Image 1 (cartoon, rainbow, N blue to C red):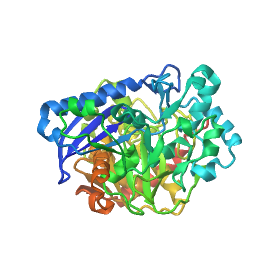
Image 2 (image 1 turned 180 degrees about the horizontal axis):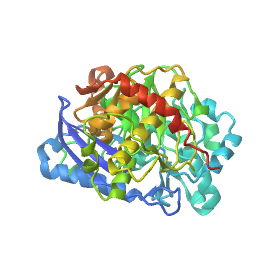
Image 3 (image 1 turned 60 degrees about the vertical axis):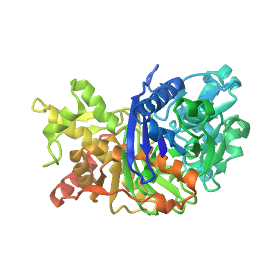
Length: 481
């Protein structure tokens, strides 16, 4: 038996997987996010621990025999968050999350301090990444910065609580802006540019390698017969790739979670940081992932559902299975700024084309289309690096919507594939990494693609209609600074 724990932005999801890679049980607990000022996004690390422990306690109650047999644990998690710990390894402040936009000025300062940043990391400095957050803390909260003895990404903090050891995997570390992505090791120059050293970051392992073991007291709490191995794990999107078997060059997939991304595994680095293309180490050795990332995806649907006072399913139901034509309304999904291709933390959302005849259905469709258009921007900047996408799988909560996947197929003009349990992709991928850390099996033998349950093909008339709309949609964006 193996566990996969995914520390997301909106929830912690835990899956229990058997030796035949069947999901035996799942548990989820929601998380709260605070925004003390416009553009800020923070979480209390204690909330992560409480939620993760609650999922495991629930599994113990419902599946005690299966949980007792767990041999390996894999962790996945939201990337880029800055968790600052004191000399006693206690958090000094709430974690600054990936979608926090406060450190735009610090990004410019970091690139000036470290001219080799883009060459070394394969990325440009953006507020979402971890390193600029530390410069912001140093400037605005100097006492906290001075007291910082260890900086961890979210899932590494959870691993610290589970094991007592500070360990990170190279895929998650790629999103810190401190990693030399070609060498898969910390950059001393990058750490120094933010006033840190290797003593203040965790040791690194590959995602499928053993990292540590579960504390004995916790193994006893959950009735486990042994102390399970905890794997290196992965950031949420690399873990999702492992979950759907996207471990080979060109196996494109789309993540439709709180944020969104179009991601392609590669065995060579072809960076395009000037257009905000991301390059991260994959969770499997000698592979990388190139990605275009958008800050708001399924969270846009959750936002419009709150405004209308309706459930997401109630909003989606009237849309049917697929669009007949583009909505007369256009939506910019930049509710918390944007990464690819604009790198603009000040960008904001917009509804355009409203009239007295506009109804709720038209607005909801526009929201889904706006996210799809943003992913088309990601497609085009990836094409600049030589990556041509012929088809894509979809994971994340948004993959449940047939209408949305039909929109994506027509906007991107490629077949889109859906899996039966696509929304648990990252947690399932983490469980696979936990297994690999125990068994040492060949990655390709474990990380096989699941069965696709549905394919959405582009329709020529709709492809042409969305292609005509895309330039008009792009013209709505105006930089605010």
